Image (cartoon, rainbow over all chains, first blue to last red; front, side, top):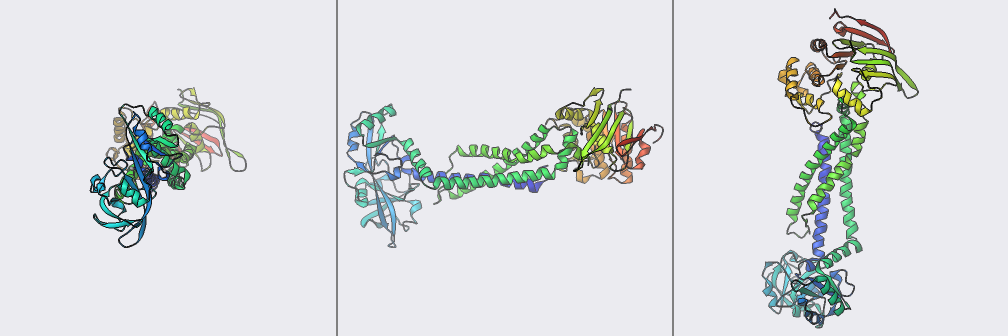
Length: 365
Length: 233
């Protein structure tokens, strides 16, 4: 029946493709934004982040005393504790226009919390007093600077020393510098920092270490890295319009796809009423008819999923390394495929209702 | 001789949109193996309704039905479907073949409506039947590549593949030309020679009557006459 009704079959397949592609694309962009939201946390290499009290979003952390780092180093649990400085600023482009940036300062020689991948250059670039890094994908926003170009942030001289890769922030263009330079560029006081990154010694119980840190620093927040990453993402999803916006877009993709599947599968059954009547007359039970329609839904779902993921792969490939954030964690495609198959089965419900109502006697009319 | 199907006081009502209308009056009738029974009558006389009740496709509003000596009146829909699959073969007015399947696949699909597996040997048996009905070279043909007569013979193969006790044919020649009709009717006549099988054929075409071993005429939902005619045809 499916092979015969090519147009309606193609329509149903299109519905599945719409679900796979539209929802998948939304999820990829949302996950891409997730990576931006918590980019500094996810690539820090630290076990625990110390932030100002009540911080539930790393991009909105207040400042705290830098000396906390010295206190933390005193704990036996701690291998190292490094402050990270963060300040806002305006970068003056070569064309004299201004671009808001977030200057992140990291302390040599570990450079913890700093860049993790470079397009050009390496960490040693940040050892130079004036050096800053900008991300390869942010160059356009920053006026296409080249290595060695001298720019200004908040009226202070700095020099582009390296291009990072993938170090793009959610709440502003990220520029890295060494701690001292970042304090100068971002106007951060010498005794303040935005966070302290802590690495525990091997074999240390993280929960016990956290408890000790909370006693040691009662006016600060000690959060495991993974938890801070999740908290940051949840903050944006629940406290801003991002969650509802993406949720709505995803829902629209699902609804459009399901409606197409329902209508086309229903049309397929309507077009083949006589075939179903003949099958019923020949001895097919209602449950056999259900199996036939479900099998059709499975077939349509399988083809649609293949085509949809092929298109989605093209989208991901096309946006890889572009300014459009897109990232597809490996667990999403199988879950997405199963969910879509489930929708196909649900979408075939109306067609099944129609198909099982077809009277076998109608084969004789 | 035990009838393959027996009806006792069978009647059927339909709702015509205003009131219940009895289209088949209380009918007692038995069909026997080795016999081609023709149910004849004008349009609307109730002959197809009678055929569908015989074939357990339609439940009677009143009366009782036996198949091969077993009463099936109170069986569930699913149980009736299984009896249909095991005991009956159907040939419809139009062949009722699935356009996307080859002739052979259509025939096999008719036997696998309750499961996906084709039983061992069924494919070979189907090929034999294609040969017996003179369409051996059309097993791989698609329905649209076959003439009306060839399609009906494919439908007969489909009906015969389960080795049914009763072959029920609903105006099988009404859409065929004279030559194709003759081939189909000769085939049905030959099949009715099998002492294990009864053939019941519904028609309003008097040209079919000479093929009948038994001619049952129906008018206004009642049996008007029931005559045996073994020497003719």
